[in-house]
Length: 143
Image 1 (tube, one colour):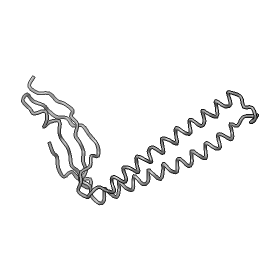
Image 2: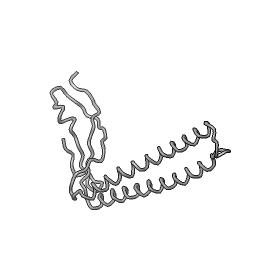
Image 3: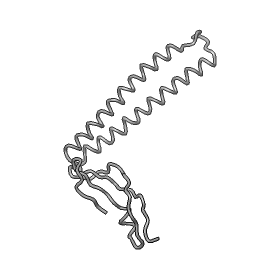
Image 4: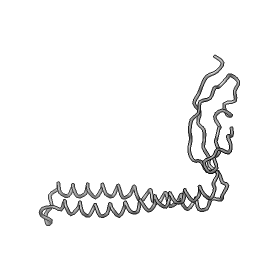
């Protein structure tokens, strides 16, 4: 056997243009706003659910009622923390993006492609392939 067909990763990079930078910043801003809105909605839902599950006797709640209220608070707290963490990560990415200079290359993801490998081929060349895109057009294929 002198050759074999392999799937190898291909890094997709984008050259940062004004158009791409604005799109990324817009997407990040929308995500931040959506997360903030979801946190507000979760707070409202939590208040409503807590009111609906108030113990029959507020002076002496049963262990089961206390446990149910704690579970409700834990659930909403967990959901709220997910949104707040997403918001913080998005704010950091937005700040980083605002500082990036036009023309910089940013990694957008990884795809796979099929390649025929022969005895004697340089694996480093085969494995280190990247495609550079500018405004949705391929401008370079590097290995």
